[in-house]
Length: 226
Image 1 (tube, helix red, strand yellow):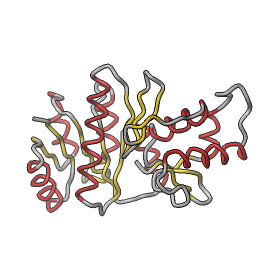
Image 2 (cartoon, rainbow, N blue to C red; image 1 turned 60 degrees about the vertical axis):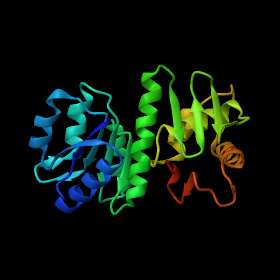
Image 3 (cartoon, rainbow, N blue to C red; image 1 turned 90 degrees about the horizontal axis):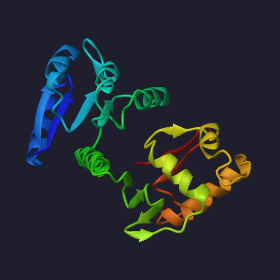
């Protein structure tokens, strides 16, 4: 049985999530403060952590930093704010995903299961990125949609991996260009990036004209809806 840890101070949310997680077959420990969380974490026997950002005695970010000193356990943040800085801060500190309150329970369970699948693949020695219908097998250097191999160029593949490694984070063009720098032996500028993204959408989106995975955030950059 998978064991989850929930750090959350809202009693009504704790009650609802406890019922939902146990109904899905998970074992669950909960804490309402950083002090309680640190006491429970001492044995580190958890498969995934769900951390609220705002707590009575600190922040879920603080606990994440403590955990990351000794463990690579998947971490999902719950936050009442969708501000870019909070999202980037959580991911940079070692978080794997985030969800903005209020959220749908089905979405949370889907994110939890996806993180657990990724952790399983990694521990089995096969690094895999997985999001919705898209799967990337890093050792093979291949990407699939609904199990069907995608024919991607080197730049498209690297772009896809970069987005999937930063789910739900708004990435500026400068950040993306740094990741793609000289990947095909040529300088890539902002105009070329627009072309790459359009071509990638043609291959991964069901309706490239109305993308659901690779989103444009006007005035800021792009976001992978993971």
